[in-house]
Amino acid sequence: MNTVQPEKIVLPTRRLGPALVDLLRSLRPGDKLRVTQTVRVGAKKWEATAEGVFRSIAYLETGVTTDRVKEDDVVVPVVRFTKPNGELTSISLDEHTRVVKL
Image 1 (cartoon, one colour):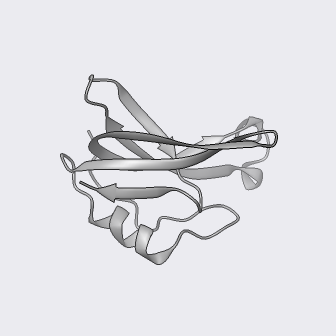
Image 2 (cartoon, rainbow, N blue to C red):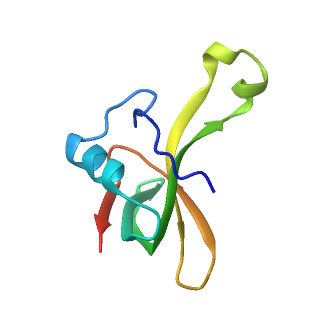
Image 3 (cartoon, rainbow, N blue to C red):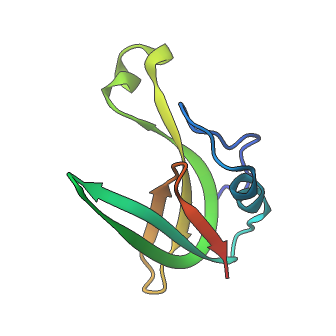
């Protein structure tokens, strides 16, 4: 498992808050965390929360653009962690994501 943190933690078009970036950079494998995001479908919104043991931060290349024009890549940071039931989970970050170290 690669435990090296990325040099920068950025979104492709928006900014993560400095406090979130500092927290993410301080996380080490084995730290317990809680991730909360707002889910929106149409006009409905609700919060979804997941907890687990931190594994790493990585970047995910998304969309068909990764097979087309490299300059059009959409790359998003993801937090990888293991849920209490053993499920390996990755959550992509956005500017509204809340992460708490437990």
